[in-house]
Image (cartoon, rainbow, N blue to C red; front, side, top):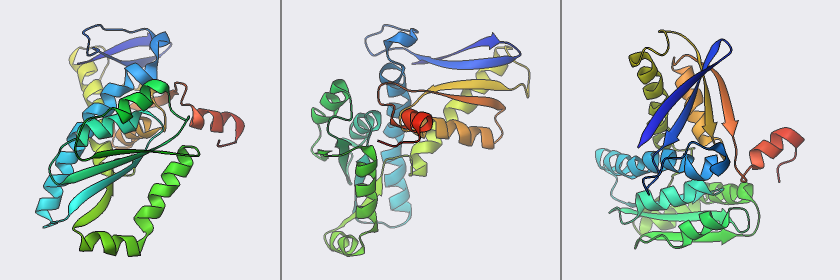
Length: 239
């Protein structure tokens, strides 16, 4: 379960998200791994909805093929996507991750995932290589024809899929609505949002919420050890 907390710093309100862990222990300490503890709940929620959005959409559009999900991960998305799609009828999922580029806990979470329709592949390289490989598979027209002939088609569970982002946009609308309901802010008052994020998908959902009209002033990214994008912005080198 999620708890939205706010605090005033200067002349603006900052919003932080805290979560009830599965073991029932609530931890608000940033030192306990923002990305590993808190963001897990963000992605698990969004990715538990995505497969059902996909299947419903496929039926409405008379799509008869099974959907094969290709996903590249820098750590967090992989486990959440695998758990969300595990044993969902009409789907299969293959997750690609950079060997040595995710934490040991994240790797174990992925490779021990149960499900008859789940597969995990480690690649040599970084997340960008994994993502580029997935995009190349999507763009391979000959492969697309071969798959269609066998009753399959590709889709993605990464943030390039709007079905992944839509449920996450709701978090920020909900947070603002709760602050209003609790009379902790005034209507139209801007807030700052701090989001634990790896590949910036979750903060992208916050950006969409801001563009849709939620009064958000600043978006702050908090990265864990999977900080490739943080390092890129600091050094200009993507590695």
